[in-house]
Image (cartoon, rainbow, N blue to C red; front, side):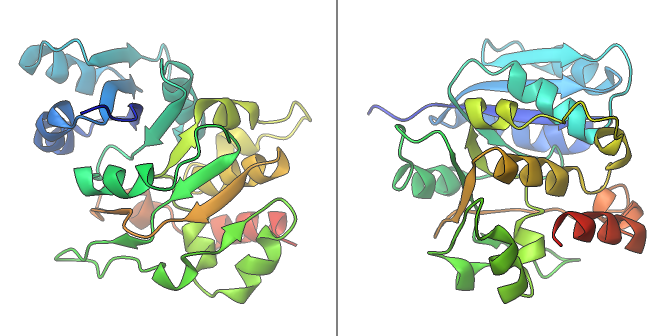
Length: 239
């Protein structure tokens, strides 16, 4: 059977316990043509090279720590396929997520983000539910309006575990305007990246059936850096 193929792009740093569990499943996924891993310090790549010898794996180590925003852009820049699936190194995306995505993806339209509608409940987290937003499309003209309409829309805009064209993602780069947002947005890197995508003509669709495991743990940005300063930083873009 012929599948639409994706580059699975993972930015990582010291997440081997999660990668060790999930990589075997990704390697067997027929929708994933390659797995691009960009590692901040090389520890995860070292463990992957020790345990795996697979041509699907494309491994890269940064010369210095870049932070989440830049590291994800490095991962996407190394992708060989026009459509990429971004996933955090501590989360897991099952085959059913891709099965739902390919039903709605329009390969001729590179300006759409295909975003999940649900995350499965975990032992320490109830998960996120955006099913009430299925059918809504965030556009450059209305994303602030929809953000105000739904109390949880700020969370969906903060979801970077989605499918997007490499062209759109790379086009939405940090402007050379003297600001340092790309380095200080360690927790809200996704919010900032998606803001730039909207500003560069991208839209976002919440897709039925795109569901995955979103893992919350003591080492996650969600726990360590989700403070009011970051929230205010985000809200400044949405005024």
